[in-house]
Image 1 (cartoon, rainbow, N blue to C red):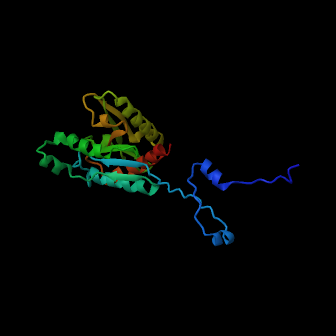
Image 2 (image 1 turned 135 degrees about the vertical axis):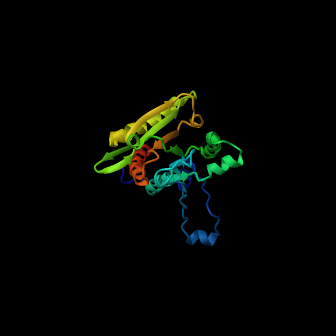
Length: 236
């Protein structure tokens, strides 16, 4: 029968056992007689780090019928941000950087390599180099439920030893894309003599959205679906 058993909880010992620094406030004898000692509960200020995506355009001047790839990157950012994802779009003028460094257009990857290096961190889940292909309108476009879409292709550089890690991520995203709408995907293209700066991090991918004859509306239609793919991928 435990009805007459009394328990005494030593707050100080309990807090010390849990790893908190406990210190009683000094009081005058008069205060001790009239005041009940209050235990201050520790407050934990935890900082929530949003998952981050870094979007850049190595070939920033690639244009659509009525827009460009930088505008496409900004649109994808606007689609993702309401879902508690931090999105950084690189706005450094690549053309001006090439001119300043006395570099040719083919050296664009040297510029974005430096920029990419500055943004690599543990909180960034994807680095997307967004391009536009040079394919014909019929090749780069598909129609679904009366709506036209700019088709998407993933490009992986096979020159570096760990390219298969980048490929796995592209393959994951591509399968999800095909599950949404198979014809939207043009698949994955591996170019063995290039790296596309993907040697810097396994989460670096390159996507080509549409071609020069696609409209921004068609590109945006595709990026709306790709946004859902990214949310699904990040959510897991």
